[in-house]
Image (cartoon, rainbow, N blue to C red; front, side):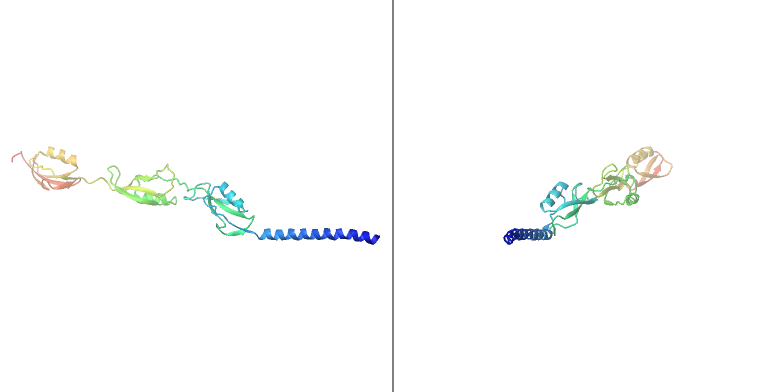
Length: 235
């Protein structure tokens, strides 16, 4: 009777042990398979943090912010780069490190207007900047070789190349040389002053007897006209 009872108890125990062993083996197998599972890393560049987090969650990964950096091509707050390139395979539940863009770096520009081109370049070099484009323009108010204008201006944010306009001095306007013959010196001086001519006068008379260059010759402001005078206005 005792033997029958012993056998009756032993069978359930063996069955329970078999079930427990099976469960243990299944659990270990599941864990091993889970640990070896790999997934594709999604492309995160230019995504917002919310978008990147959602993409990683779908892939069984999670997001880790490693830092921030300036970049003129990626908007502030967007993913600038990731430590594992898109398309690479990694184990599930791994962290993907990302760097967030701070947008373009903002510089404080010095005032370049009325500086020579060389001095303007020196001021920019001190700030780690350089001129991107130089344009030459005529100016009646700014000396030749000096900066007339700059872009961006000092109170604007720098997000591209720096452009400067450099003066070529005033426009050279040409004239036909007036006919000063037989004109009074007073009248000649008044006309010459209006068009910017320089006079060199020989003689002590009050009227012009001869001139060089001849009337009708092309001249420009700043040119010199040589005159000889005579007494009276005799032809």
